[in-house]
Amino acid sequence: MADAATTDLTATINGVVDRYIELLTSGTAEQIADLYAEGASVEDPIGAPLRTTRDELVEFYGLICNLDEHVATLKWKKVVGDTAVFEFHLFTKAGDSGFEIQPIDIMTFDENGKIASMRAVWDPATDLKQV
Image (tube, rainbow, N blue to C red; front, side, top):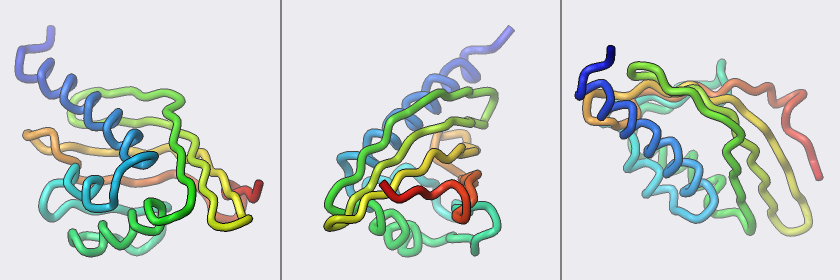
């Protein structure tokens, strides 16, 4: 049976994942970076160079948040222990060009409910679709 601390962390992680998806639609790169712990890493997609500084996170999420349109929709999520795995749909548009992707993200969290690592499972060659 889960203890209160585990139950609280699970609830916190669930909320952070929901907030992450919300911010991909209506937030700023800085707000998304705030969800991460100091020294966290982002590997998006898997195999890409790690981003490990706040400046790198803000730059990375700015690529999405600064587009004309960006809408994320959570498909499903699973939280166990300090780990969340979830799939979402992301539609982006810049000018007349629209793209969609449906990655699966794997996040680990620290004891304060901050994202410690994020790995995005998707292949740019097959999963990024122009619409």
